[in-house]
Length: 60
Image 1 (cartoon, rainbow, N blue to C red):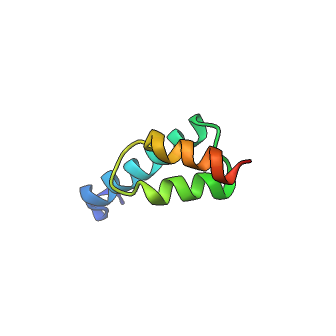
Image 2: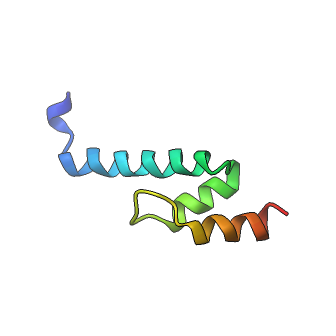
């Protein structure tokens, strides 16, 4: 079963998981977490600027 999944796909899903964990670590929930994860597609963690923007604009 694992042989049918490419290593690139596994890495892609791992990075996505890291971004979601980082969003929750920053206490983002729901749409705010989804937005942060989407904005940082190319990174493993969520940029502090995005976290600050979400906290100032979306969560107030």
